[in-house]
Length: 256
Image 1 (cartoon, rainbow, N blue to C red):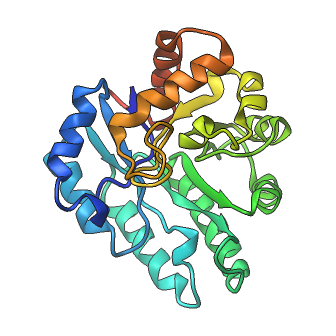
Image 2 (cartoon, one colour):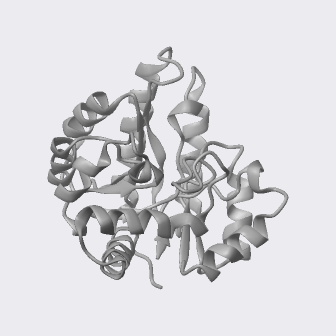
């Protein structure tokens, strides 16, 4: 399996990062993809990519919660890294987040457009974060969508209609721990999303799946998410693992 979204460079893993990563690979993972947040996460992310070459892969982008009045400085850094290092697997994570603060919504939208253009320029998938902003995200994405833009909406918690709109724009659905939550509402959505549109993720260290909910999340818990998707779609976990693995390899151009 491939964990398509995990912040394994987080301070929450500083005491046992190597043991945590090894646990993931011992539990059936063959790759972990690391989304960038801002300038503070780059060094730690790239160190893990170098240490676990061919198993841990980096993205480059600016998270919406790091967008403020000086966001252009961060985006210059993102652009510079994309120009000088040619093996990033995606532009991200980026997107819109209106959960904490709506002060910089216009700056978030501008950062969204700029990073979408970077994804097109470098022919990379775009990894989108959206929180309390699904309608705004889809509207913005539809305004810039074309045949050169593709990617995934990670930590998807939307509707069947939202998923269909994303598919129409060449975007996959990233499913994580929320699918295991009783109040997550995904039992009514996942059965209607074609398996070929799904990739799996943990979003570690956040959103740990049941039965680990409330604890620190880690890539080794990905199988709980695969099991729940299999249950919702009434197919075997092996089918889920094989299909989502292939989807991730194709989306992120992974030679595994």
